[in-house]
View (spheres, rainbow, N blue to C red):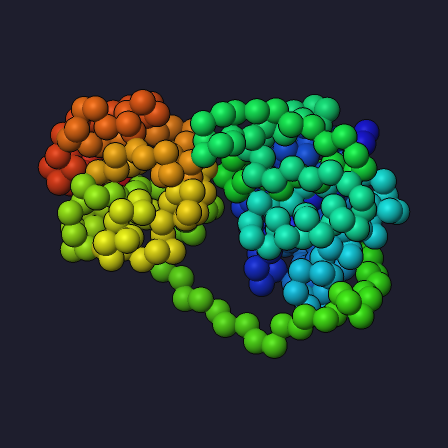
Length: 317
């Protein structure tokens, strides 16, 4: 069975959910091999990777790999592409992941596809392009196919793998070490999940009306264990921080459930959330474009509907 390399996303030794998604996708193409870059590897990490089907784990846990920006991970993957001759390489379509993928494509003289929302045998990538207006299937025709896959585009499914360990020493050039990490600042996290990785997202738009009224959106999100998002209109108005903007000029999300409250559904916003598995729209305008995309729609005042929805969710806990 063909080997598929999966670059592991981890924070302080904890494997991130997007890696489990990538391993799930990799199993549909061949035999998944997880690639661990940097310190933090542990028995718990191995067990987590094995749980989701990693047949092999390449471990490059030298501090030097994480002491420099992006290039060491690229060098590690390029080295493995040369030695293991995988059928494909999968990375998360994060800002860093896409940069690693682009650099790897240059080093290995290979084709790259970014922002894939699915993979099928071939391998062929499923993509949503032109602001989400067109869905296409794309194939790499040169070198080792490299795919950057959007977080939350796939539901992780457990399937035990052997997770046979292989230590790897990566050789870094002076160019690989040109940019050095001099400081790391840990961002304080709240109780809510990270927006781009959340399984449920509740977003508010212009219809929320004010910054104070976003408390209604937050209460529903907290009841559902969801992340909070916002449209560009809401962030531009100063009602919610820009880092929570969902859309073409903000963040792209692909949760299992997306609730859009008071959002009209402009194409720029739709481009950032339309790959959600289930979309629920709440808007008092029955002609709002968001209803064309929604699986379920509620016509009415969000300030009446959302609190009732929150109350019903709380009752079922």
